Length: 325
Image (cartoon, rainbow, N blue to C red; front, side, top):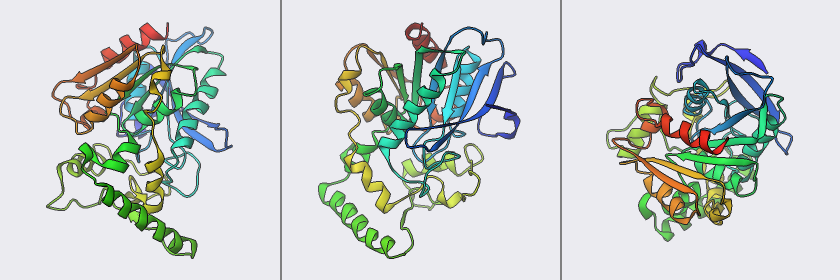
């Protein structure tokens, strides 16, 4: 643990009542996972306290949204840990921007290992928040790690379903097979030393005919509002993944067996006009009790990344206080 100043960051704010630390710990694959640990200054570190792990949107880093949630929940009295998933941000993993959802789920479990071995954390009171893609990763993790006692997702993307079927089933089976075939061909090129082929989800410059979802993400990731370029990376390579990596999501089914998380509670939060709302509704339908679907009025998908006037922090505080007591 190394205490750091939050003043160097532009994508989130930290209350004067909260101390921020840079931490690293190993996952089971002996990869360093990096995180920001937030501890309320008034907290009695001689006692065992509840803690919450926070995961960032897919393709993002902890400084983009995860730290917003972690810092605000710490200001409400919780120990919080925002992590960079392996292959992203300051965490280890080569090649960069790799897609390995099982390793992402492992990172959440490794974060529990870390928190549960701190003298000031009660290992029986650890919860998690997954934002966007991390919503599906935290669900995947919770299915096989009962140490995660309460789970909340925000603007959740089922990264498997959206890769297979598109938003609102807009992608046909034929289109899916074309993507798979293209990725298979690209593997030969990469194996022979060719350059990686990137799926340019989010261009540096927005085209005039960009669709509404691309515009929504652009307004966050490509503007001062949410831009954060990890050391050694470029703006062009933030968010985007290779064609050969992306197809690995085709085999990712995080909501299968979601009912086995019960009786641990699940809270699904989504904006009322979020393009991703279907995934939270699907997960809620499949999950067993106790569960809750909470719809935020006047909110889109990306609105709940950082707009603290819309993010239902009161709801999250009540949820974790009730279920991590």
